[in-house]
Image (tube, rainbow, N blue to C red; front, side):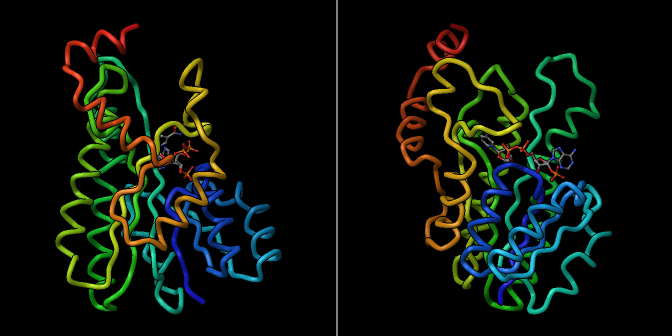
Length: 243
Ligand SMILES: NC(=O)c1ccc[n+]([C@@H]2O[C@H](COP(=O)([O-])OP(=O)(O)OC[C@H]3O[C@@H](n4cnc5c(N)ncnc54)[C@H](OP(=O)(O)O)[C@@H]3O)[C@@H](O)[C@H]2O)c1
């Protein structure tokens, strides 16, 4: 049975995606800072769907020290999904270490890990590299301006990687959610009305893994909403987002 690695597996979205992969017969390797929080999920999924589910302690900023987490999986995993995200502070007066943390967790760590796994997948001539970016990476905004720019860098990296690997049997997928109801975000007003559940998102991530699309918006209509946002003049957008 094939293994899938979920990085940042305590994310609400990752937990929902894990259920969708396990239900379809995939073994799961859940990498997280808090494996003990996944005890219930791992035993529930393995007993319900008769697959192997393991949760392992993992620190993304030192990922090469954690190679043992996947080196003993046989056969080598067929896919890796990067869920880690960090909003960070929103002021201009933030420390350099906080700026680095936002870029590291949202982009640079994913780049390091995906380059490493790309080489493994090239040797095997198969594999899927999937990262959860965000629609907010498509246009600069005053709110969470660093997070948005880090997600933007992640999306452009994924596009380049997809082109680099296009002649091989390796998929590179950029998942771009809009608003999802998770512990990451609190929504009010119009945003709450537009937010979808982690369960819906988990199913869409599984469908994205099976499809041949490079960029997947969740829900799909964010593609068109973001087109309108990108066409909006900057001053007007700034005025609207201040309201
Ligand atoms: N919720 C939304 O509306 C929304 C919209 C667009 C994009 N996204 C993106 O979707 C992804 C999943 O987010 P979510 O909404 O499911 O949020 P979540 O439940 O809060 O998950 C956040 C994830 O980030 C990881 N993380 C946070 N700080 C970390 C740190 N210092 N070191 C290592 N890992 C850290 C956590 O890993 P552990 O497992 O180790 O705890 C967890 O996997 C993120 O990339 C987020 O940017 C979310």
